[in-house]
Image 1 (cartoon, rainbow, N blue to C red):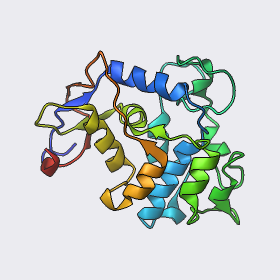
Image 2: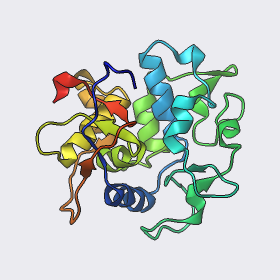
Image 3: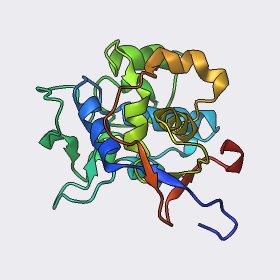
Image 4: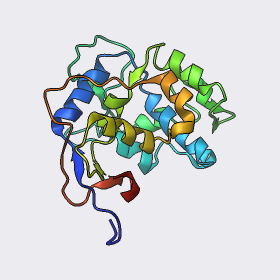
Length: 214
């Protein structure tokens, strides 16, 4: 972080991240939904041709220390029994980027590739809902609490769960003009939680937001 960069004031708590893992793990979700979010963002930025399944931007979302042989962790699975608790299948091997390459992208996501290139068709919202979310909205709060677990927030008011959702929208480029698209895939329900969503940040966190967001 440069000396002129705004200093983050809050980060997500471990309890919030654990809640996100339990919540996402209880729902049937296609694991390639992570790749879809990344590719959609690249398309909106006009950078789809430069998209890579090995990009740091993508892999930082799922990188997790703690396993001797599997470096990635994300609680999105579409097969097997769900317990609402962490599962061994949330850990992913180092070759997961290979399964997301244009030539071998996983079943249920073949519409994200054409002629060995990534594509995001105009019907991507409907396809993602049907083939990745299985016609059930997924919690933006849970996705935000997981994918922003290492990021810092600039907040001057009392932080709330809604700030997590706002951070998720900023991270994956869902501005107000995409509201119809956003509400077609994500729920914004906030549970009554017995834990704090945020705690004071330490230096070195990645910044979510700008001073004007405070």
